[in-house]
Image (cartoon, rainbow, N blue to C red; front, side, top):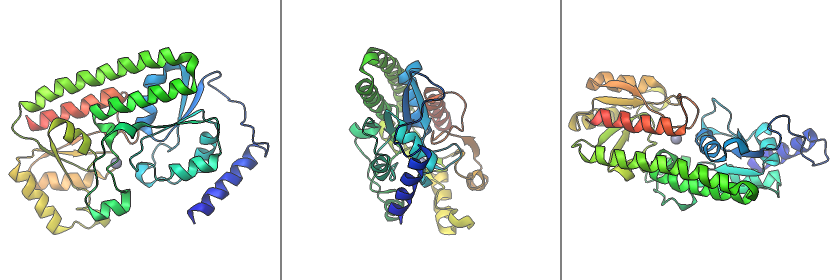
Length: 300
Ligand SMILES: [Zn+2]
């Protein structure tokens, strides 16, 4: 079924391209390296490193939940005209393999940003069935993000060697800011006795690994609209045992679920960024820092 969809998309694409297979001339971004990035965080990181030299288009349109994405004609077109494709890896883009094949873009350098990240395996059977073997959310850890930035520098330099020095310089700046963030918050979190926080969507396993923290999530408790009483009771107990006074909520997950839990345990609800879409203000680094500061404040 999926294969048929891809063939259909590839066919449509050829029609759009006038059957000649030649990419249409770029409307804007003349002379810039056309880059397709899978979702928001990948786009932000690539823009930080590529600077003025790149024109980055997100394959997953704004407002689409990245975990649920299905390739579209538009995203196929972006990929077929890109010189570079940046994806997270770790199963975040289960559609990528087939899409890259269908795009038949031999000029394209493919960057799997998380290739050097030590993966965290999913343990829950349901989770494995839905999202694969590994937890994909490595971009939310500054340490993993440094490895990802290196992979992006390398890929952009390979696709556009004339400007490799610029990519390296931008990458160095980006990485040093992540390093600073890491050092600051390692110190801050070490000084705390509480380490547990609760979010809407369990997206912070890599961040927790780096800083010795623990996450729990309301995800699943309210699946299908009906709260699962036993799971909710367990989560309430968890919040009480660890004196959780803040429940984090994300744009992609209904805040209602977090609000119900917060009411139950007398906590407040605070937004947090998963960077899966552009829900927050500021760029990647600003939102990462905001996350760390908000988690820190909730544990103080
Ligand atoms: Zn996610």
